Image (cartoon, rainbow, N blue to C red; front, side, top):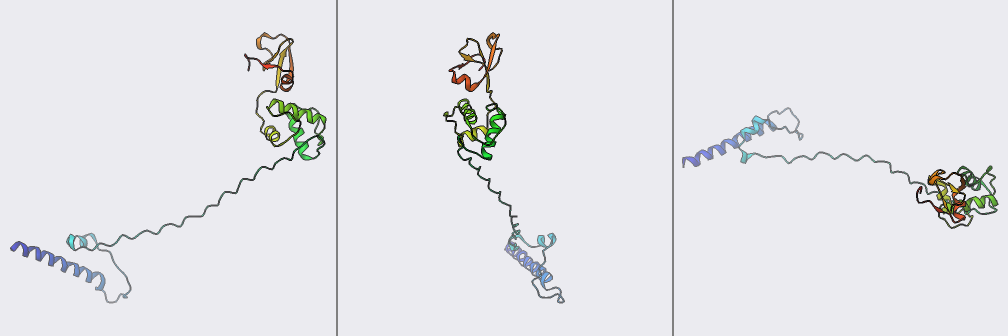
Length: 197
């Protein structure tokens, strides 16, 4: 029985402490305005209140940061399609094509801007070397290949009596090698050398 009283006094003591703290926190100073000012309890004040009588505050959520808007990337422009260029075409596109053909050794001279017979032959040679149907017409496939040209070799070598072409002039002990374009070698029906290719 005495035990129950002791716990009862402890519970009553805790409530008295809690009321005293509340009075000190909220009503201790009459000069303060009756706004919703609150004060946190110190660790000593909190320790004086029994665990079962403590009122815990709900955790306040921190305000979430507003995400900073990021600029969306601008769309990549679609590559402009080159119109089909063929014998008789004229203009800047033809000039650009001829300059590339000259740079890669398919066409000699200077770019005229006129799609003539020499340009047709150069385009055919390029098509042969790149496994494209030989038409002499520069369509989208030809344009994409010539502007993204692989770096493999267009000049090949053939021995005087050989039926194969070589990527090196000294392959297989050749003494006299004839230099030619790969398209000419393919036109003549030569096959690649098994040693140097």
